[in-house]
Each structure stands twice: as structure tokens, then as C-alpha cells.
Amino acid sequence: SFNFRLTITDANEAPKVTAQTINLPAVVRRGAVIGTVTATDPDAAQTLQFSIVGGNTDGAFAINASTGQIAVAKPIALM
Image (cartoon, rainbow, N blue to C red; front, side, top):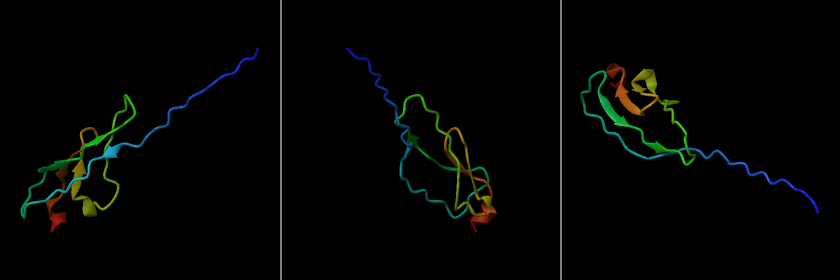
């Protein structure tokens, strides 16, 4: 007779972001919502957090960390 232990570790899979294109009108005001990032996480009971990590020249855009909603923060930066 013998004893053994089997341990299964669940890997943390990366969230999957839906690819999309956002087109802006020629004139856009501060606070205008221009789109929403959509993503899913294959791991159960995960809360997604959204942020802009690059390419946001002069802080032109803002993103709601909880919802992924993208808005214009500085219209002048878009010119």
C-alpha cells in the first residue's frame, strides 16, 4: 500500500480583448464617449480593470477603469 498526493494548479489565463476600430468625428467635445473596450476573462470570478498604457498622446483620452468606456479628455490634443 502507498499514499500519494496529486495537486492540480489552475493557470491564470489572460483576458481576451475584442478587436475594434473607433472613428472620431471631425469635431468632438470633452467628455464625449467614443467607445467601450469589451473583454472577457476565461477564469471564473475575475474582475477586469481597464487602463490606457500607451499611445495616449497628451492625455487625449480617458478610460473608465471599471467599465472600459473611453471618452475624450482633451479635445485639443486630437488636433
